[in-house]
Length: 384
Image 1 (cartoon, rainbow, N blue to C red):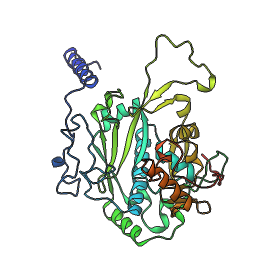
Image 2: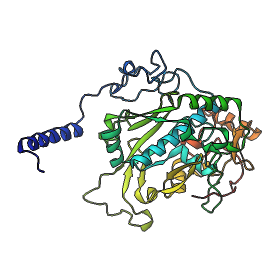
Image 3: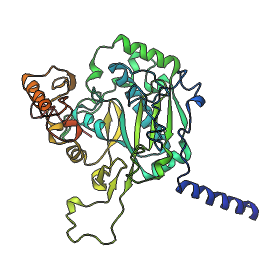
Image 4: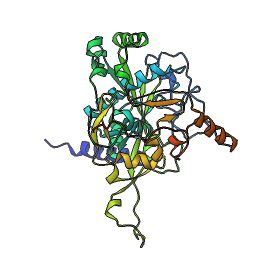
């Protein structure tokens, strides 16, 4: 049956208007969901969001006043380390399963990818999760799923009882991909269950978990000059304020007159890609994605993961086994608290005397060198 001519004309005009509004930046609202409209979804009585309306008027996502890794509309304080890691794992499981269900291709990047390389799990200092999506993916999330709330029951996390916990399912296994490996749980799956974990599980059994998917309207602006809006979307835990940063991979503009000295080496072939936070990639380094496990969760990682890690963090991030108060236990395949050695103390004193911070964060800032000291990193290898 054909639509009446009048209705067809109205639909055509409406579609044209919608496309015009999508491709042009309308005046930015501070929030699609201001705190006053979140009552019933948040347990707070007032917001702890950072008031940046004057200093950063175009910024969409506003982190909390007490820690930049929390959404102040849903959290008023930081979580202890163990609880934070526990909630991050549940949040990642909920996110990946939701994206798989709705057909959005996504993969982990940055610090999470480095954690996967070492032992298949989150590193103790990780406070959020970084993932990427393609342009088509962010467009679909914005058009169909923005501001949707996703509820997960305890049974979807395997928390019906202790014997059925999904976290006991194992992970990476052994193989020959050149990484440290691990069981996909960061070594924590073998620990004796703690009282605090039982309390968290009981809370999820009683209330479940709710996650808010919020898309930044500035996702349509692909310019790296839009430096306050490099995060295109967030997957937010409404009970803790923790979130997953979602960043879009864009295709870089091509020059109509290629440079004469442009390297045509097959090894460097591929479409040039980038993110708004000024990371540059080749399509051959990202795709095809590899399927693996991270914290016992089925996820995807970039194809040339080791090359990307070397580029971003330097070679020592893949070999040195001490970082900012943590040492890598080769037997347990886990980062554990470890005091500084005399060598490390001397190193950091030297950095401080030269005006550096001396905190042991240099290696993981992508600048190579300091902060890590250990053996050659020839540990057990894992698989993808």
